[in-house]
Image (cartoon, rainbow, N blue to C red; front, top):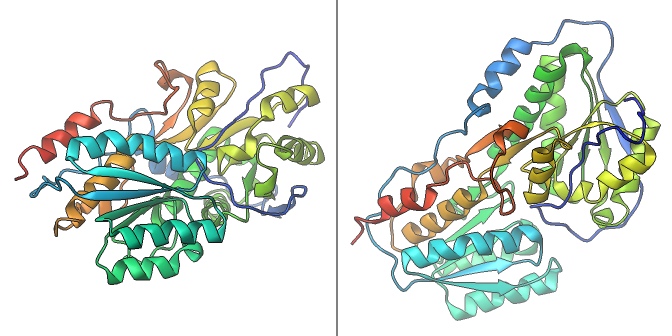
Length: 376
């Protein structure tokens, strides 16, 4: 990575769609994996083939199975943990609930164990017909899940890895989706830089999915490009929105050859643009699931690219799943398989309004309405 003049373009990323957990602060720590002049050349052909289904167009729409029975009058609880992603999922799920004729109630909580327990106690006691849980780590509510299962109350999740599908039949952004995203991010970097790849992946240990992303990303780079240089660095969750920019700047200054930075979650990079500019640093930045602000950076040309995920479709897919599960129907195969509409986004793909997130299928509401229209 070279340090240009202060007038050079700065690639950056800010705000997030992912939760933060309480943790101790601290500086980034870094580890090197592989890299060197010797060895076979990068398998760019294989990398291009891997991302082909996500470049220039989104991956397939996840649901094509008609709803049989309407869930009219069912009561659905969504646990809002107080983070951006939890609030966003509630906002996105509301119109789906209205279209389905169900009542969606937001149960507020924080990421503290006692707060999560209290929220789930309320849900169990009030006997909701279904529960939507975004982003809250399983250890904080495992006992409550067992109670919900015992009461035959269906549960769906988003952004929680390692779920037991016998207890949570539909889980968006579970292990398979995280694995797929990590490999796609690595493949994309290789297609851009080949053997010259020198990349850092920023993960946050407190977030289980971030650790999985890190492992799969490094593994894919090593598999397709043994000569590429890849390292990882840690950004504590407690640094999000506060000291994270200085943590990243310090890391990049200590590793001046780094040319590409991949962030597992946007909150890691909140406030980074100004910090990079002040430090006179330039680095290509790629985001996993860019949020509206990150999308704006891509649109403005300050942010290189992002692997976009269609959050509205994900929210409606989970509501569709609860509609089926709460009425004794099987969830749609695409929902069970954790099919998520994704696409690599660069400046040329973002020509419209990005203030509410990226939407792969602008007609998603009509698509779901068509699937629900014949239900009795």
